[in-house]
Image (cartoon, rainbow, N blue to C red):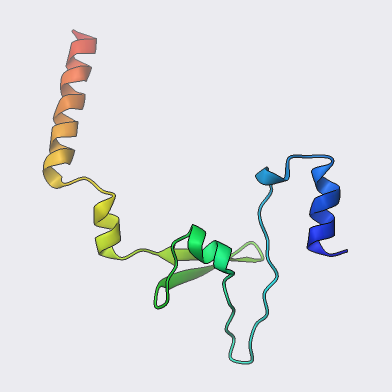
Length: 97
């Protein structure tokens, strides 16, 4: 039974949107695989990006490695962190007092 047929049968029983998505890919003679375009787009993977491959309980997981610059875009500055800590302390003192 192929994957598409399996999902069609399963969709009559459960909401398949909550199931892990899978895609069969081939491994080349050099050990390379192609990550499907839908997944590259979803995870913003581009030519030259690095990924980490982790072996976990008999499976392989591919995890995108983000650049330091990308991580900085989504993180707080030192001042923002200190302001947040100070605000948290003040709120805790108000709750206790």
